[in-house]
Amino acid sequence: GLGETPEIKVVVYSTKITVTKVDGTDNSVKLAGAKFRLLNSDKTKYYVATMKDGKLVVSWTTNAADATVYTTGSDGVVEFKGLEDGTYYLEETEAPEGYKLPENPTTEITITKETTTEDINITNEKKTGTVTVHHYIQGTTTKVPLADGSTAADVVKTGNVGDMYATKSVDNLSERYE
Image 1 (cartoon, rainbow, N blue to C red):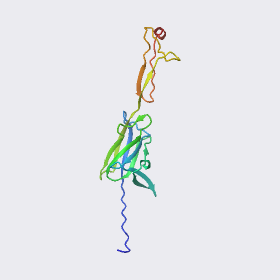
Image 2 (cartoon, rainbow, N blue to C red):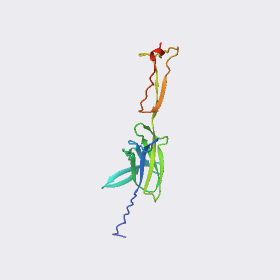
Image 3 (cartoon, rainbow, N blue to C red):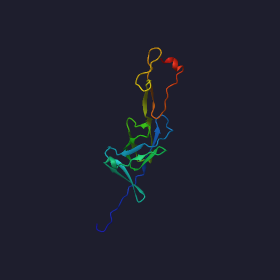
Image 4 (cartoon, rainbow, N blue to C red):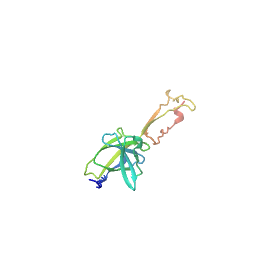
């Protein structure tokens, strides 16, 4: 009737997803610099976290540019808080420096009413590359001739980006070349 104050019901969701970013070869190595955002169950809305009066307020947006993107620190951890039960999709948008995104950068996570914290580890493999060492006569693109009539072969090295490689030293170098 008239003069009655409607009841205001505030629902607080306290479940969180804790993501730890680790090296794909050594899970004890935590990775800083990975960027994540969270999508809803039908992948049409993105998680947005804002603070209002010192409290976390979670909302959802259809605009990916407005999504809250969390970056892992030196502990490799990010947290998405204030979630209700349901299915979410965690999307890695940027891998840490020297690492590549997983083939499938999206991970499905299901939270039930009993869940308080969902802990997951996500791994990244290091970026790899190939270097070809050519043996040319200095200042030219002519391969170095060897004493047996052949030319010095190229050496191909494959490894992790940032690793250092050296060609092996050659004994009796002057005897091998013309």
